Amino acid sequence: MSIFQYRRRHVFYSATTGRIPLLLLVISFLAACVASQPNNITNICSIFEDRRGWYSAAKSAEDRWGTPIAVNMAFIYQESSFRARAKPERTRILWIIPGSRPSSAYGYAQALVGTWNDYRVSSGNSGASRSDFDDSIDFVAWYNRNSRRISSISAFDARNLYFAYHEGNSGYQRGTHRSKPWLLDAADRVQTNSERFAIQLNSCRRNLEKNWFQRLLS
Image (cartoon, rainbow, N blue to C red; front, side):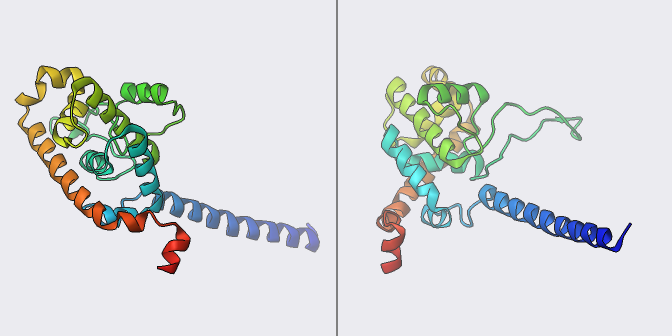
């Protein structure tokens, strides 16, 4: 191999091994930022300050389906704690060996495959992903809109909306939730969190409505 060939090959390898790992690190970092939880998931103002795009998505879902932001956010808080790739824990065989998962629930909204497919067809959002916050908040608002229409539940009644979300509207109307103490407790938490989120959002919504230039001047 000539000196020229060696140098050209050495430069190529240096550039390749230097840039590609760096590029992969950047991509991995950005992906982690997108999928990671906000810093303070108990405060809706803090959540939207961390994820400015989330407020726009939550507002669009509220406007489109008529379910308040605080209610929809309380659902996601309960279902996944704002984790993009949340899944139900696996069952255990003999308390040790990991078994199957109890359902196909996945993502921010813990939506089942069949229900998610219904949403994609009904909403026209055919490319929706369960690990995408914008799609997930729209899904929750869509489902709650259906529950309000089918089961005549108030848009602010997060507790009963959650029963319908978990049991399906047919199950809710049959009262299947009444025999599940853990679900009754979960629905109470959703109602409490919804009310807390509504109070918090009322204190910061005006600032969230500002565009970047208005925030710069304030």
